[in-house]
Amino acid sequence: MRKLVRRYRALPIRARLAMLVASAVAFAVAAVSVTCWFIVQGQLYSEVDDQLEKAVSGPGQLQQAQLALNDCVSTPQATSGPQFQDRYSQVVTDDGTVCLIGASPGKVKIVHADKKEIKNGNDRSIYFRNGTDEDGNDLRVSTRPLGPTFNRNTGQRGPDIGLVVAVNLKGTHSTLNKLALILLLVSGIGVVGAGAAGLAVARAGLRPVDKLTEAVEHVARTEDLTIRIPVEDDSEDEVARLSRSFNSMTASLASSRDLQQQLIADAGHELRTPLTSLRTNIELLTRSEETGRPIPPADRKALLASVKAQMTELAALIGDLQELSRSEGQRGERVQVVPLLDTVEAALRRARLRGPELTIAADLKPWYVRAEPSALERAVVNILDNAVKFSPEGGTVEVRLADGELTVRDHGPGIPADELPHVFDRFWRSPSARALPGSGLGLSIVARTVQQAGGQVVLARAEGGGTVATVRLPGAPTPPPEQTEI
Image (cartoon, rainbow, N blue to C red; front, side, top):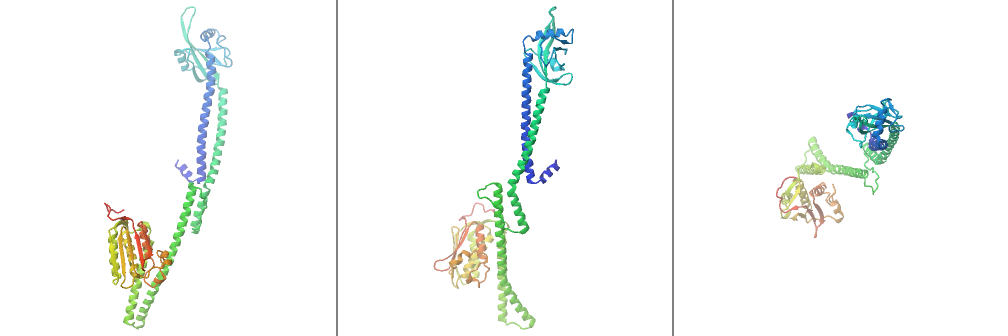
């Protein structure tokens, strides 16, 4: 059985569908055919039983049967009694004695049930059964009890007798055999036709799956993600949905690969600048050591400061790349309820260290959000760093948190209107800011973190000059009853 199951599972889907259709049709046809055969058999037997009932139900049967039984005393076959042409007819006593009547073609084999019926039955009951004659021919037998006999001379009660009439079932069986052959042929044709129809339907239904398979094999072989499967717009079946899902998947993979390639290219471009500067400065220091020509202390100090700055910038760039490369399922900490006020205050402390010459004014109200704590703090620090970096010396940075809205406003040169749509793109840097330190990834990280927390971030030109960054995060002014991790 297991081997058959394994072989079945190894078949192509078309063959399995055709087999299932053929099996279902075969079962239905077999059920209908068997039912039809039994119905016809019952009808034919009912007609035979009606004929036999008419034959044995005539009046005066007891007297005629007794005369026939008396005739059998001198001859083995009585000439008197009810005559039935082409039928087996005989009188039977309760002890099994048989007396044939007229031109009966043979003797019906008497069974115990016949004797019991003759002895215990009444003349209004007729018992039907299938039986045989002495030559083994199949018969339909009817037995009618006629009651006891009486000796007219002595008045003594004789044995119980019954009239047994039977017909040969050869014609009935021939009809049933022909019907069975016809039903078998029709069933076979139906099953074969159903199998062919199932195979045709399977081929037609699986044609889109073939296209999908070819597309998948093509993608696996060539890594070409531009391939698409044509789908009718008004089609809503499972295959159409599968095709649309495949098209969406390949489009997403193509977009992801393009973004990955763009990220690698941009990262390589951004890494080239600090690496080149580092290599140049290190070569100068190495050459000074090799040639024995010392670099003036002031220049050496400047070189070391430049190396340190480039290493810091390189480390920050690598950290930003690692942050951007993490998927949603690879986030370091679990999302939890975070007091945004504490996060902003921690970011403000770091910002004041980076811009000691600036005035950073803060007006903060409590607000609780669901986010990753470290990622949220990094996003706030990046916003404040931008404000510190572009603020003039001695300028002011205004920070306000109220009702889930964090605004950071600086008084720097501001962002040109045509550059605002690009500020959250990876590695994008304003032409006027390319001389300043940074990788162009800070605001991309901010946008991603805020989006993961279910919020929005917007940068706009502030009235009177400068830039205002607005972050809106869903939450509540009070913590939930249980600050459990989710």
